[in-house]
Amino acid sequence: MTKAAEWQLALPLALCFVSLFLAPLLLLIGVSFFDDDKITQPGFGQWVKFFGDPFSYKVIVDTLLLGVKTVCATVLLGYPLALVYLDAPPRLQKVLIFIIVMPLLLSVVVRTFAWIVMLGRDGVINQLLLSLGIISEPLRLLQTELGLVISLTQIEMPLMLLPLISVMSRLDPNLRDASAALGASRWRTLFTVIVPLSMPGLVAGCLLVFASSTTAFISQTVIGGVRLIYLPLLIWQQSLVVFNWPFAAVASIALLVSVLTVVSALSWLGRRSSGHLQG
Amino acid sequence: MGRQRSLADLSYTLVIGTLALLALLIIVVPVVIVLTTSFTEGRSLKFPPTGFSLQWYAELFDPVKSRQIHRAVYNSLEVAAWSTALGVLLGSMAALGLARSRHKLARVGDSFFMSPLVLPGLTFGLAALMYFTLIGLRPSLNLIIAGHMIVTVPFILRTTTASISQLDPALNDSSQSLGASWFYTLRRVTLPLIAPGIFAGAFLAFMASIDNVPVSLFLSTARTDMLPIRMWGMMESTLDPRIAAVSGVLIAASFLLMLIMEWTVGLTRRMRD
Image 1 (cartoon, rainbow over the protein chains, first blue to last red):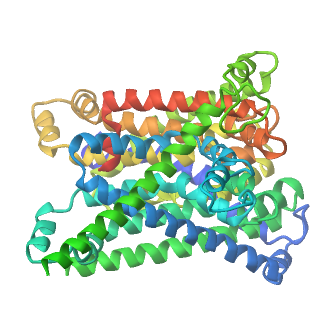
Image 2: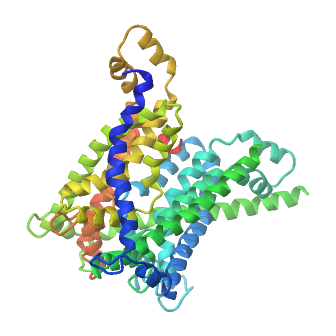
Image 3: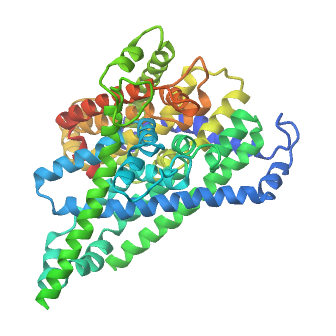
């Protein structure tokens, strides 16, 4: 094989992707244009049904908002941790990165289960708040959006931290020293030097957390319960409980499009901010 | 001015320190709590646990009482092993083919192969279920293996492509100018140098397959039950206390795996880059 023909090595995988990835997705789009669940009557009925129902918009908005809230919480807690990592001596850095990566290797289901124990009526959080005297009655945290956002913050945290740390550790430490030597406080250095320069990592982290939390089926159903309805639960109910495949196809296309729209808008912003810095 | 600055710096240390500590706690505490509760003597999963016993572990390892869970574990391991093996073969071939190509199509191919990472897994899971059903295939582990391969191969592709791009092209050229064949160069020069990258990718793909929910949710059936789906069932209606023991085993296993990966390929270093 010559160097010019090396590209042919990608052919087997390309074949697999066309037949096992592209074809099913095209079929999904095709199925959505059938009116009945036996998939015999072509038509736009399911699209009209989905987008004619205000409930669908509520589910879409709730799903996207859940992603936004989780992103905000992971930034608020993850960014400071990344800053501490940056300032830590190498030995402590090794311990920190181990703690950060470890949950990533731990099954999402286990991490979700942990929050059932944490958030329950006599769970750890309620016991702590009661003993500190902050609350007098146990809070209802399971099957609420607050509880779900708290759990997703932990579950998705590594996805925020890894890109952040990867970008931050490539920053020139002289920049921070120069900023301090010129009289800037640490806050000013943070917002005028570190945050703009770490923007690509921050955007990458937000992308991953958003995409993952909006589609986190197990956490959403187990912590959120069946009363909090997000798109993944709707898709699951329609396809595997009600067996209305065309409607489930429409809902999953709605999930795909709404998540990808936010993700591409974010990555466009990310590219713009890094282009601005270089330019 | 100096006083003001030190005050500002103090508030910085306080605020950033508190938030970072909170982040660390929120990462670590749930894992510790689960491990502790799994040794409870009681029938409910409360913290602090009442007494100490291995009863839930004993029940979990009982081959009769926990047959379904064992079956799900074997299925998950089998699917992860096969989908990773296929992914390594097809993915590293594709990486070799695309990473050094300057052709515009190579970029397109690369983004196509990486797209399962950004596409919501549930959409692909549902699409795969409809596709396999409508072309008349009966549910089986093979179909789950195919589905997992598609969603995990990007990990292998990414780490392998990164290793290839770090290779000095002169190595390849000198091997060939010394008369080595293309295949000999691949076997004796390229592969040994990119092996750690392939290995790290394979590890990530294997873990992603073990933990995969969206594809397994749609493709698995009662006969081809997968571990995460079974665990979901154990949490859904009434809480089965064995879930704490399963979690304990998985925590120990991922901890061990992580130590091994750190010693062999420096996993955390690779994930930071």
